[in-house]
Image (cartoon, rainbow, N blue to C red; front, side, top):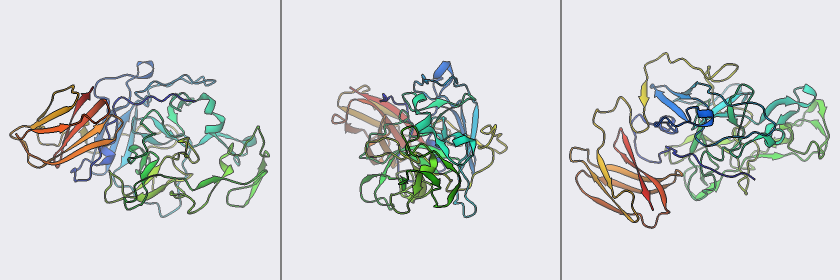
Length: 411
């Protein structure tokens, strides 16, 4: 039904070694470094990333780099939201009263577009009992990238952002595609089968399922609803309301928040991570992104009316996509040639550079294709890439506290 297009540059680095202060909540963003524009000539993707020891501040227009629209039956128009979202660098589990994922943004995708929960703000007879599923009720107004604008002009996705990344890659770990406002990362649907990083790749399955009901008189927890909803029918099919789904512990890979604690390429020591929910045909399924409640605690400033415009009241460092202003003044110097190439690339690191560098070759989809450790200055390295698929690749050269990226075209 939908045509897939992909973001032109997804800066997501996969590595398993120390990267100093540059951790996933800093580097997992699509930075606009070329003045690119999107819908209605509005600057696209992430405009700036700044960070302190405790927080990352993400400045974004809420306009993606891919084409969006039209939105059938939706009169709203996307605008520049000038968001500054605040993401904690030290997310913690919430051991108290769980926090509901409310209406409006509940997280931010890696391109600065808002993450919304499955609700469309309407309920049956306005009784606030049976809440409409936006994917069912509003799905006709979604564009080819499965997004649409809210009345305030905020472009957003209620479900897997299919144009943000290649969600059909099933043989490598999905990338980080966003962060929830409790600070925990959101991944695509595929992760390691074992939480310890073993077992190969597996589609992470939700533990939510459609209930076996024909009348809407009870809630998912078995209690009697304060008011009945319409009977299940062609006009109100099962899944039309959020309360048509129930959580069955252990029936899938993910918990009630739609996440789990596990090892990923970005977190070799483990982290709690959310995963988008896709069925075996890679079609989005409930709860789509995050469950009805966050796993962690949520800072003020990101949620609620008028939120997403945080003021920075602490000393911060600006991250430019390859390095930060607190790095040593001298960048890593290396050459990649020939470029474009049809078979081989040569890499030579400058003579005054550090020893024992690490190199990754990343496909434009975010898939790591090749890695090489212990690269030394002045020594030429020849890499045969003739077996790679044609297209654009990114060469990431790592030191302990910096990374420099170059791109190469294989034709």
